[in-house]
Length: 438
Ligand SMILES: Nc1ncnc2c1ncn2[C@@H]1O[C@H](COP(=O)(O)OP(=O)(O)OP(=O)(O)O)[C@@H](O)[C@H]1O
Ligand SMILES: [Mg+2]
Image (cartoon, rainbow, N blue to C red; front, side, top):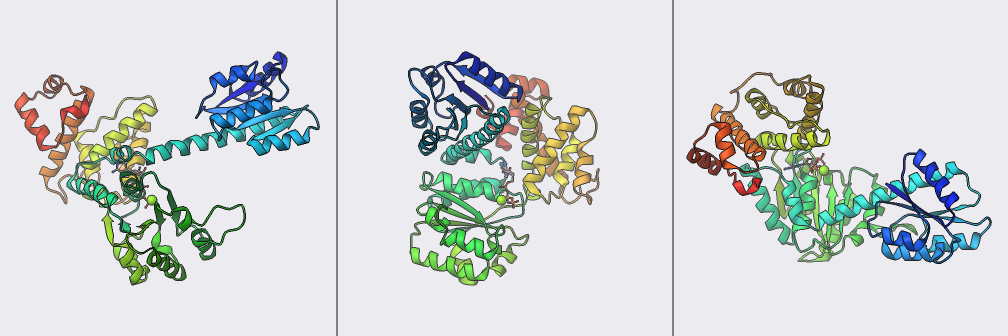
């Protein structure tokens, strides 16, 4: 995060800048508000520290202009000693905080730190919300082309358009939360509110207040109000206490049909039956009007390798090392692991594999062994037909090679010693398309 320091006095500007730079901030200095306004636009990644008394546009007018540019921008004002009314007015307009001259430099650093943290949070949330309103981005985030994943994509697109409530069931880390976002983003509610709450995160009293109100002064509206017209996601629905289940049912019944607010209930119980058992039947049937069952990773075959290489590449780039090369034996091990933590666990193992590779030690097998104590390291051919492993590995190799050659068929033919016709046939068989690599 940057800090823009605006002050007409050069000495002051320099000393604040030096001090903050010593504390690790990237600083920029401006001799006037007019000059600073040219550099600061919406989503500007930083915090503004400005003097109030300046010739030309003063600090208060500058603050008002900045609030017009980006109302979430933290602005710290440096006011004259004892100028309380002005400080109060500044806070009312939207200043982050003010410092009275002469100020303690440590307090300045402290304020700058907190303001930058807030700024980062604001910008992250904005980015996420933008992503949320763009369904295609979220759909592209869902990796995998196994039949179960293809069906899941169709389900998301279909159910995204529909009005009924949805129940999402699946083991931990299978992508339930991601799918809840996607359901909202691909349908007509995309621009409307999206509100999520975990029913396992609060006691009954707090949950009741958060969901249905009443809430105290200065607090946000109850979630059922906030979500009106949009999507209300209830994570860990199996933990919703019985009395609140009754109130939720009332809300659902009062809405009539089609429902104004769509409820997406997420069930985290390891067995789908447990979810049904923990909800009163009338509520369960309302929520499960439409249902999405997320398959565990171990049932997604070759997707395991696709996910592993994609995330491996991502981490390789992040850590500045080479993309992972998965051997046939490692591929078989990845395909055979039980993956109790599903995609989240796979992402974690991919990251650790890259870190190991950077250090030049360790193996994927040892990571898998540490994570899933029960798997045997070299047992190929157990449980699944050999053909499945071979095909998954073949697909991964072609996929990786195509990506490395950026879709150049000639390059891939050459590297894998394959005649064009065979390569085309295999690509068609595995649903790979050259245009995806260009
Ligand atoms: N098909 C997928 N392709 C790419 N990333 C995925 C896929 N499925 C899940 N992920 C990623 O895996 C991680 C776990 O997914 P998510 O949080 O949605 O799972 P969950 O089922 O909600 O887990 P939990 O039960 O712990 O809440 C996230 O980082 C998510 O982005
Ligand atoms: Mg989740």
